[in-house]
Amino acid sequence: MQQSNAYVIIFSAVLTIILGGLLSLANVGLKEKQNEQVELDTKKKILGAVTDISNITDPKEILALYEKKVTSFVVDINGEKIENDKKGNPMVAEKVNIQKNYKFKKEDRVYPVYMYMSDSDPSKVEAYIFPMFGAGLWDWISGYMALQGDLNQVKGIAFDHKQETPGLGARITEQGVQDRYKDKKIFDNSGNLVSVTMVKGEGNTGLSDYQVDGMSGATMTAKGVNAMIKQYLECYTPFIDKVKGENKVAIN
Image (tube, rainbow, N blue to C red; front, side, top):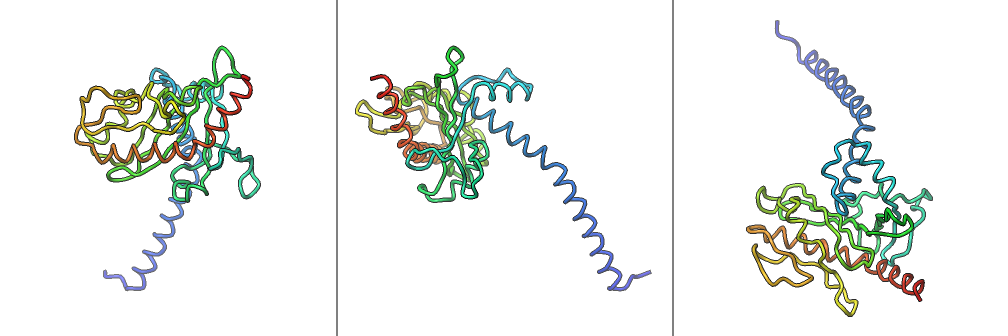
């Protein structure tokens, strides 16, 4: 028997409300798990920029290693530490959403800093790790660059992306490509920021301390990576200069 229009409308409305409620409950129930996964993923990337964690499969071990080795805080564009957010809550580096933060003007952003501490001397910084975010060929790209304690030589880097071309730009997540950045430098002998540039093409020789070999067929992704690294290193330079100045005073 054909149902009236009113019956169909009421039935559809009730079904929509029920399904919507179930989805809402599921989302609330899974939110904690989702947050835990995001936290784990972020900490894996931070650690991955500075040390090999490929053989660690237990999430608890990852989190324990992070807790033991990493200290973090947040600075502003002038390199000054930010203790609290605008609401007066303690500023936590791990809770800064780099993607959302990227939408603000450089001077209005906050900049997380992660310090990887030495095993032999827990008070000594083995590496500084800086998160970065930018635009690739099709969508966003991101990265974590680790600098040695001298804040010049690259210790490692970890890239991520949303939608770069498989086999081409997507190769920025391959360890072999990321390893090309190791031991490169970001400042020249006069202390001027040069950054690190991925050159066009692949199989290049005679590269300088500020260049890494490129990826065949991925020129636009490389340009995005280069722009991202330089922009964020420029923003972190005031903090870097501040730390270098403090270290020089301490040594003298």
